[in-house]
Image (cartoon, rainbow, N blue to C red; front, side, top):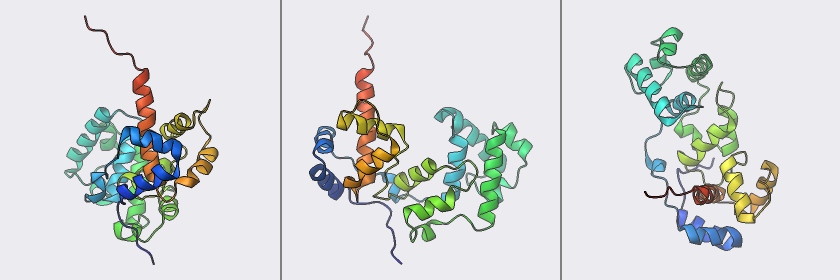
Length: 223
């Protein structure tokens, strides 16, 4: 059974993509190489990461961090798992600022962890991207995009293109000088030429979209 390493060779990815796609390559040379994400080498706890992803949904980073801090204080731990979350009831979670839907999502995650349904890192290393997505999206409050971000930024999977992400679609629109953003299906077809480094291509598409947005933002005039 093949094992999937965390992270990939970004130098090889840069060389491959810049030669494979002339339009994207022009932008890549303009922006410069993107270094490996340091999170690929850090300790990673899938259950804790999913719990935090649930808590951060639809909130600003500051607001979500405040709520997470309250939850950690209430459970007496920085580890969000079935055993620690089980030490407080739903009323206590709500008092921390956790919404009703997110409380239900955390309880579902904890129940699935207790049942052994959440693969750990060792098991994930033997699973392909779609198998991991299929294992995690049944969790209440966890969608495909959330799992894709985990695969790209925490597990460092090299060949994943989040075709529903608006930033990625906007970047592709700019690269190809399209009148409108490509549909997810169109982007999936377009991205076939970026394999086996579609993740690295997505990193550039996000940066291209950010650069275009920054160029549109007016600079305040000095007084």
